[in-house]
Length: 516
RNA sequence: GGCGCUGUAGCCAAGUGGCUAAGGCAGCGGAUUGCAAAUCCGCCACCGUGGGUUCGACUCCCACCAGCGCCUCCA
Image (cartoon, rainbow, N blue to C red; front, side, top):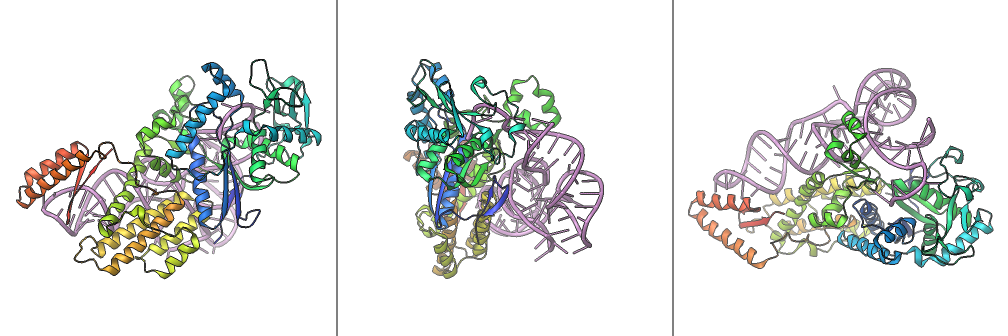
């Protein structure tokens, strides 16, 4: 009954044991805020939100840090192109990022440190590396001397010799092409900070070393990020932090697979794609989102889908696997998600209370004793065990969601078997058992950040008059059905269906739902 | 070229050295329904190809094929 985590550093699943018993520090590489976020930027936060919730559920005290890199060459270029200051641009894009996180229900991040607010620590860390002989100043720049770090390359499993880059535009100042900048001198007109080496700005990787140390300490538990960051970003971060501190930076390195844009062309198959790929612009869009011009802003996606739908979509696959992004795929998981929402309505019909107000155990131990002490519908306890086993195994959210589907089915089956929707047949004991089962669903889903609040009502449904009119139509139709005028009753149902309203005739009346 | 990942039903996707290989979407039967919807039950996979290890592999090893990522822009 212990959690196991896949560690990029060792390429194996390891038992999860925090550096300090009971406490967990997580650092996730956040965005460089120079453009609005796209769906790829949400993958890590969604996954680690679930990781944190699950760890908290398991009794750990978790501190989760997501950094905001608000100084960088890309920010300088973009702000210049837009004719605004770098800090203005950063502020705007940070707000966009925060809005997106909020829409996704990601409210578990404890700290959002900004690079520009960590400048003292960055400069001190750079100085430490120079003092210890791991870095050198050259013409206002400071570079990390890769040759001095015997362990360089251990994360991405590559040797310094194997790197045959040209060293970039600053190659002339570097001792070796693989050396990377800790500090970059400012060109005229660029934003800059004073430093012992003259005015300049931090290199790309140093800010994460400084911020993680500041908030989580020299050695913390989990460092996360996209798979694309393994090299060079995390490799360099490890080099900086570990050479400066003389101890491991993070115990576990977790990397999530990347969201890939999937176009129709990309799906045609290997050969066809190959042939097209050479010259066709569209074919290039079927690839990595970060590079793709086709990756639209995340807020546009949120205009179509509820945050919960996207969360469900991301979590339905194992985090280390790449996910193909397509609206068809999202539509598909959305249909599965609707099964849960229907169940919640069913729950409300039976118990008279909202599923969302159901109090469930917030910790695993509380859940264990609740499961042991209360009478549960058949299979519910098994589903719970399988769910926990899935999550324990490297946060297998895909498997866990499968277990949730089985749990709902067990609950629905119980409702059918006990005729709980017919008040004459529903016994208080059976309702209590049902409620305990629903509580289990709520308990487990909460660890994935699912079903915390009712989904936003579709457009129109929030309009009181619309609801009243639909109630009226349903009532009229009920009269028609009683009078055996089925032709007219069916016509109403068909015509409402054409408008996107589904009617369900139940023993106790007719329910309507508005499709998106 | 170097490092690494993936290949499971029409589609998406978990998973295990050996009972009937989760789950979702789609489809097809059935129960239920005035008919539907919803719900429940049932059906639908020999796990890329070829070898090897083993009493036994989808699961381990090798080769091959296909797709993908990284090798200093990238969550």
